[in-house]
Image 1 (cartoon, helix red, strand yellow):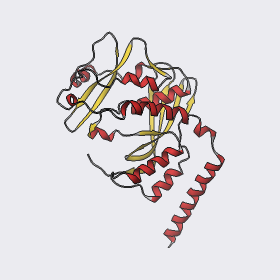
Image 2 (cartoon, rainbow, N blue to C red):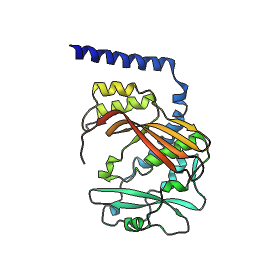
Image 3 (cartoon, one colour):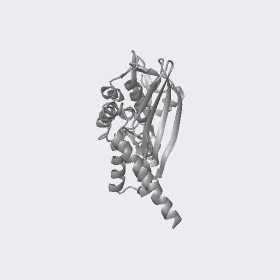
Image 4 (cartoon, rainbow, N blue to C red):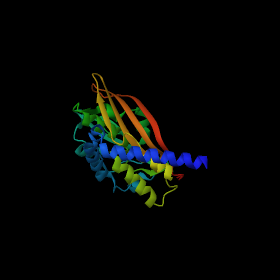
Length: 259
């Protein structure tokens, strides 16, 4: 009986906090919601309907032309661009039980890596070292979106674990909850997990710019981890090195599906 009473109190407190937040509002939470939504919508429009080329589903796959060009991301991420003289490229990694692109930046006058083996021998730096911003808060948010989700195309089988998505506001939490209930995909969110998710105090991204550092905090969701607050600390000067990444699990959840 005591446990039931305690649970009811917790539910009431979370519900009261959520209702209060919706009534009073918080301008800092929604400051970057629009650019977040527009950026993700643009990225998703480019990749959502891509089908993995059959020639990638074999040992040592090589691009044959006509595959997705990740430089198109910059059509959506309008505060970013590649460093002059560089282009965004990838080799494709296929391991039989999984496949994924290996992004890198290369000078436009150099030949691309043909295979994963060539990529591994060269050990190129993170492709982000050649991505420039316009030094606006929106740019650093887009930089972080690209860092987290830029390689989420042509994912095959086990690579599907790479499903982290950025949430831009309260409505995205509701969308996740609705999708989880509707789709026949593993375990469902429990009532308590839903309540905790709806009570998350920072549902949208925040960007803080200092003299030499930038922090970008984003709420993310993955079916193999739950709702996670992900915070990047970036070097403000170009190249915008990622100095630290912190992950705080706010609502733990695992769909239980094993590829």
